[in-house]
Image (cartoon, rainbow, N blue to C red; front, side, top):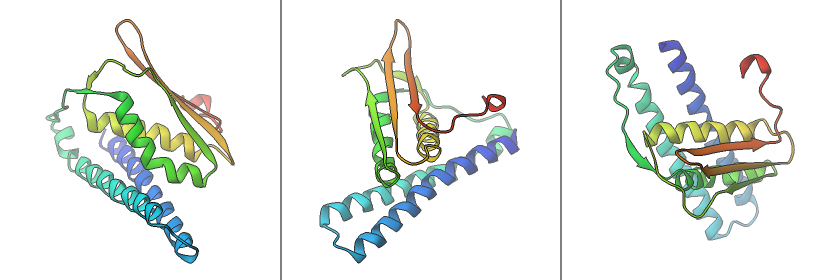
Length: 169
């Protein structure tokens, strides 16, 4: 269980570090050209948000002992999946644009709130979006759908990536 947790957290840390690196690369390229103030502010916001994500992930590493002791506490709070998804998409916007990937969310104006741990739900969404961008070769499209059914909210993602081998699905 500990090994699996470390593997998951390592994967989660790789995502914001990749965004951080690509954003810095973009800043460096833009500085060689002409960088307008709005573009710089957006890039700095991405770096700041990504740094916050890494801090949360490092804090998650500190929970390993709680997991081993079976004392981990999952928060149960109302979450707006649409808002959470939009915020995470903003973090990936520069990365996706640099890879010629278009991202789109298809969602009703209002969906019911879901109950869950916001940090862990965000990690799952980040991981799915990161994988969709990372494994889409060349240009492509990513579409996220959020749908409310009778008693559930369904969040799904579709991309034009290489796919997951059947043995790993």
